[in-house]
Structures are given as C-alpha cells and as structure tokens.
Amino acid sequence: MTKLCQGPSCHRYDTTDRKRGPKGNKRNQTRNVGTYSYGNNNFCTLTCYNDWASEYMDRAVDYFGRVRERKAMTPENSWDKRTRYSWQMENGESEHYYYNMCTSEQRPLTEQQYNDSNYTLNTI
Ligand SMILES: [Zn+2]
Image 1 (cartoon, protein in one colour):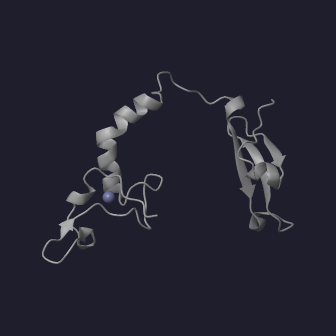
Image 2: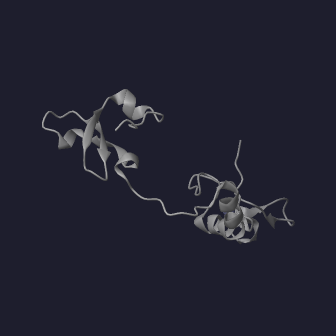
Image 3: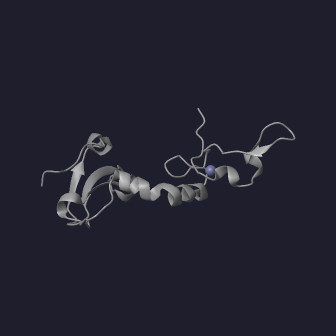
C-alpha cells in the first residue's frame, strides 16, 4: 500500500510529479512518500517534514512528554552496543561489545545479545 506524505502543504509545492487527474483538469496532489523518505518514512522531502514540525511538533512533544529536567550521562546509562569489524581485528573476525561512554569500560557481547534489542547491561 502506498504511503502518503504527511506534509500539510505537500500538495501546494508545484512539481510535475504532483500533477494528477484527467487531462485538462490536473491538480497538484499530495505525493507518495517514495524512495527518499524522511521523518521515519512519513514525508517525501525534508521540506514537508519541516512543514509538519512547524505546525504540529509542539503538540506532539507535549503529548509524549516534554523534557522538564536535564538528563545527565552516568556510568549506569552510558552503555552502547558497538562492533569491531574484521578489518580492525588481527584474527580477521568481527566482534560485538558493550562500551561504556562514561567510563570507557568494555564488555564482550555475543551475536545474540547484540541483536536482541531488549538486552541491556543494567547490572553494574
Ligand atoms: Zn510531501
């Protein structure tokens, strides 16, 4: 199913690919998102993304929860899954590891742990 661009003014940009309808009555219409999509596959261009953001972003941020207090990086929330690629390794095999951006500590990760989006190191 084709996904339509969510830009509120998409139909107002005058390009030939937006002109649709019978000959003599072609009108600019909202585009499909297409191959080069933006904003998590919801917009046809960055311009449409920005149009949406200008109109709706304040409400969206308030709806999902505006940040009211500064967050801080600590050793507990600084683990990042990383990969050492084969060309970086003496044995020619890539490996995954957890890297703590706060302390620089590294811990090995199995392929399965690396691919498991629910796997976290929360035992420190
Ligand atoms: Zn658009």
